[in-house]
Every structure is written in C-alpha cells, then in structure tokens.
Image 1 (cartoon, helix red, strand yellow):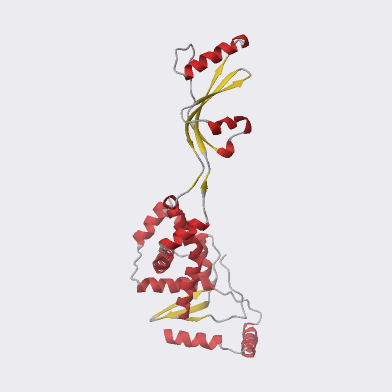
Image 2 (cartoon, helix red, strand yellow):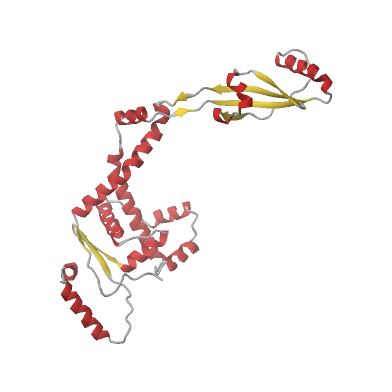
Length: 305
C-alpha cells in the first residue's frame, strides 16, 4: 500500500504542465455545473527508513490549535522529528499529556472545546497530536543539546567582550522630625545631633523601612548620599523640620564577575546558537528522507472553518 501511494505521488509530481491542464479540463467537463467540496487531500508524504507518514490539508489546518499558523513543511519537519524520537525510543503516553495540561490548568471541558474548534473528532485525537508534538520536541532537544554545550574559553571570551557593570546602589532608611515653633529650630537640630552621637536627648526618631536606590535614581539635591558611610546619618534642613537619612549599606559600581554571570552567559550563547543548530538538525533529517509534495492547480489549499 505504501509503495503504491509513493508511486501515485511520484506520478502526480512529475506530471507535465500540459497534462495538468488537460486533466483540469477533463475534470471540469466531468463536473459540469456541479460544485465539488474538497474535504481533504494529501499535501506531502514523508518516507524515512521503514516509516512513511502522510501530511494532509486537514492535518495542517488542525495543527493550528495552539494559535500558530503552520505550513505543510512545518508538519513535514515535525514528522521527521517524530521518526527521530522513535529511533531514540522516546515514549510519550496519555499520562504525560495529562500532567502537562494540569500544569497549564487546562480542564477536560476546555480541551474538548479546543478539539471541537480545530476539527478533532474526539479528545483522544487531540491527545495523539499532543503526544506526537511532545515526542518531536523531545527528540529535537536530545539532538541539539550536545551542540549547545560551550567550553570555558568561549564563556570567558564572551564575558570579556561583553562586560557588565553593576551600578552603585544604596540601602537607606529615612525619617522626618518636624518642628512646631521655627524659633526653636536650632534647638531641635541640636537634639538631633545628640541623637546621632548617642548622647542623652529629648527626641524620638521613627525610621521608615529600608529602601534600595540606584545611583541614577538619586536627585542632584540629594547627591550627599554618594559620600555617606555605612551607619552615617545625614541631617537635611526642610521648611517644616529635618529629614534624616541613615545609610545602611552602600555598594559601589563594579564589573560583574564571570562566576556571577556564568548561567546568564550560557543561556545567551544557547539562545544565539539555537536556531542555527535546529536548522542544521532539520536539514540533516530532510537530506536523509524522501519527501514528496505534489502540486495542485485545480483547487487551493482548503481552510478549516
């Protein structure tokens, strides 16, 4: 059966343009005034090893359940990756799909609605598509992971070529001590200074919760913060009292070390190379497979309504 199917598609694919035109005319004459509805058709056949997979128009339309628009070649690539998954003996069952859906907080009712909206006759059909996709993704991940490992020299070189500067930051506490009588402003300030020196005083200071601010967030009028030492309290005169700033901890600007950035750099390198590696893997699979994509002039590709 598979052999006959391949022979049929080869015949269709090598059909001369004039033969196709003649076929079209004959078809039109046979149909007459009747209107044909195209339910489904073969868009591609993928043969690799002892496996043969068929991509139909309905497969392409239904695959868009995740909101992505897929082309015939996208499904051809998925079929090739699924075959690769079989070679790796990757097993995906209903339990794997169920666990995935549970993580996504997707109910059975929601999945049935998705299945119905995308042309799947039953929920089990949608589950089969999930299993196929998971197996293909797992095979791709397994195949690419060895090429997404980077040597220490590569990581170090990236760090040197792309230095990252950590901006200075300050952890502060603030408080406000008001005065009722401006004539006693100097007296109140004197009491605050005693408080700072841990000397007996007549005031009570309530500090706000500590906050962290970056150097570029400090206004020009508060630039005194740059020169404060840890534990120091600064008094700032205000119209209705005094604002107090206590430096809890200041961290100067510095270049982030390799050890701090290692995971980030590895992820950046992987992301930069990932598409290139995927294209290479898929192209190798395509080169080792027989892919037939017959062309159709009579009818356009049907859409799922």
